[in-house]
Length: 92
Image 1 (cartoon, helix red, strand yellow):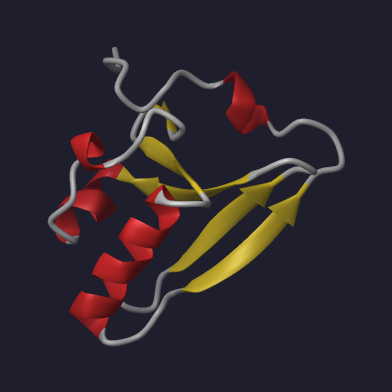
Image 2 (spheres, one colour):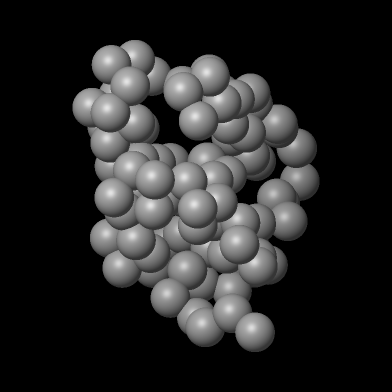
């Protein structure tokens, strides 16, 4: 995961860093470590930009001694992430 590029999904109002549950585990994190403003779709987790993404990036830097590369994917309308269930909802 050291050279992983992550996607930051943004719209005019907010942004979310896309990671997977496996990537969280690799950094010693779990979904309970994040707020209800982050979302999920299957094994993909969308960490809200203000606090939750920072927790992930801090853990990444602690483990790999650098920040990951992030690619911004912007839309001028509401992002699809806004329609996803909250991170704490059970995935079927």
